[in-house]
Image: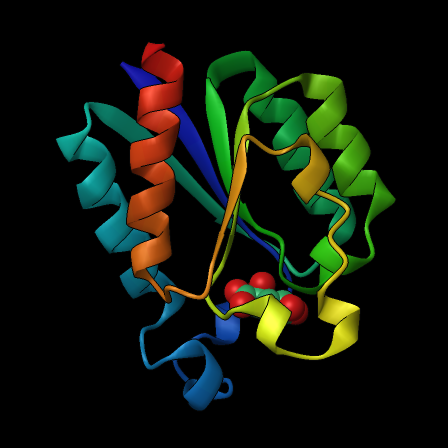
Length: 145
Ligand code: DQA
């Protein structure tokens, strides 16, 4: 059975109260619980972690190389700034999928640049919480192939 790390970056602990017109009403706990159910249906287990600190996210990626086979990451604003997250994901060689709740390409220009996309298996954005289901399905297929 594959273990997957579901990683959330800064401000995503505020989901449900933060700009609901953009990010929806669902809390992070709600997203994680639905993702756990989805992962189980795909015979995968999910470890969930959210941090507002870049270093803690880097540490979580490093730790995942010992017991996870893949990562689903919504790095929030660090997507657009973090060479450190890029290097951590690249250095551990863990296959990963980048997820965004909103369609970042329909928003401000500073959200159009991602330090993660070029080394991801793929990117899913603009589908709200459903994006995590798509990411888990895609990761399951990737790990089977
Ligand atoms: C986000 C998009 C990012 O640009 C933003 O900084 C976030 C959330 C999303 O899920 O749509 O915090 O990753």
